[in-house]
Length: 229
Image 1 (tube, rainbow, N blue to C red):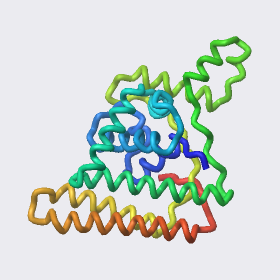
Image 2 (image 1 turned 180 degrees about the horizontal axis):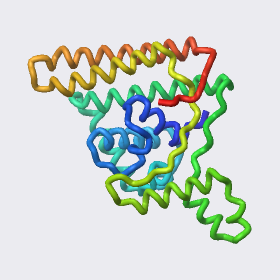
Image 3 (image 1 turned 90 degrees about the vertical axis):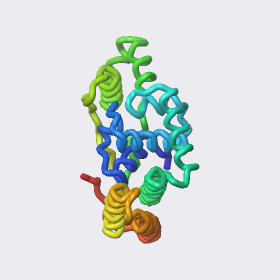
């Protein structure tokens, strides 16, 4: 399966609980920025897109923003104390693996390819006939880019279409809930008397999620549907 930026953003959204619209926006809240950086980092690792195309596909950003995000995630992954970024990266990579495994069965159709709005705009400007032949997804990609670039506001309006990916098996859903709870407890207890057990629980929850994903890949559920959460 060819991994798309849209698929990567969906997986990061799923494991962090942060909406896709927030990841694509210019919101500078710490948790949202971390999720956005991970999505940009994974896009560089998992696709053959150029940095400008990755930036355009993820909220209309430029290549320098992508480079900065990649450098920050690389730095975080090299720091043993930065466990939260590592947990998000590993959980998102596990999610991508199960999506790829399920799509390989042919049960679920692959998501649409990412559309480069700059290339679409060039075709639209080439001639009136080319402009009227744009597909609906291409028009939506142009509209999304315009809205994001227009909105240097705290809450830009984002038009986002959910892609179809398989439903999470119950064991994976339970493991994700445990990981989110462990992350919250670890953040709360940092510097306190319960920091060590909270860190150990976070590590255990991450191992549990990894095992759950592997079980789901080896024993996929027969029924799949679009994730609504």
